[in-house]
Image (tube, rainbow, N blue to C red; front, side):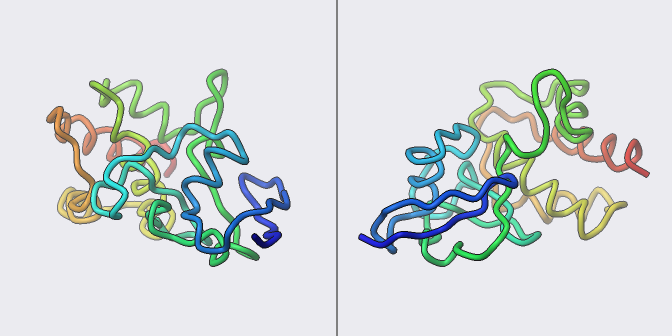
Length: 154
């Protein structure tokens, strides 16, 4: 076990964990955050996506020790129920959620995309989300939500 200081959603906390513990487990168990979800455990589905220093990262395969000294943002760090982030509001407005399991990954991936490219084309949005799995089939609404957020934050 090692003591690791992690900065999550603007809050720094020291946790005592094995350095190879996936960041996902630390976020869920030590920080009690439920936005990032366990999906595949292999970094293939995107349900566990968080933003680390501006980039979308699969937290289920990212060692907690590698996140030390970096700025970690989870879904909870974007907005709240009473004041959602514009991207979260766009997902609500477009009714882009069906079962909701993939939405953490979709929103966090979209946030990283919009931060680096505020006005992506439809093809750029689809390309950014290509590695995020959604079995419900709300892809069209998800793309519309990201386009809406792009326009509203312009």
